Image 1 (cartoon, rainbow, N blue to C red):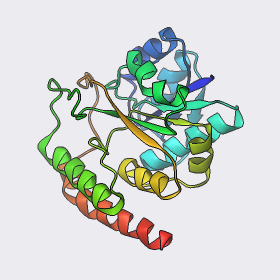
Image 2 (cartoon, rainbow, N blue to C red):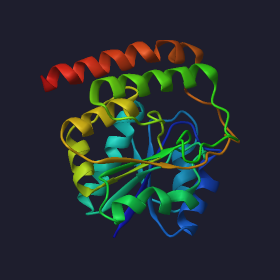
Image 3 (spheres, rainbow, N blue to C red):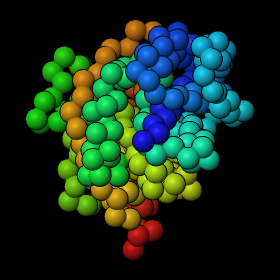
Length: 231
């Protein structure tokens, strides 16, 4: 099966070279989506010889990932794996992420830091972000009955049908949790597998104190909007 790794990146010029090398060494195709970075992210990716989608305006993580989905769909890939550009996702675990899709057991696989079978005890999530993740986990379970322990994980894989669906319709702001609700609503199978995360070695996170504080509100609004559409 043809696998494409989509790397959304905003101001990740320091992290990208090592990450790209790891993905290529693991044997996977890759496309970097430069979300109108203000540093040399685009040049860092092109210097490493991989395809780059350069967005003229900053679309946020949702728009950047959707651009990667469109790229994959037009080039007939079977599986798309989302890997964040900050280097925290280990490309050596991609085989774990895509395993349930290859086996025909899932349409979407979420790489989980908090899976009860093997939680990543070495990774330390900032407290406000962890609170937001727990909130989205709870609301997803209340709305759907589906329990995903790491709803904010950006390390995930989708098969061709799920990619085609999201190429047309994908949440824009804090999309990870809301995307799971949308997939469940239309009948896609979601599986969560345990993975470990690495600490960021360069650059800075976009998840500021303000963004962490308003995250629960945004998740609530997004979930209610999707539930209303479904109704």
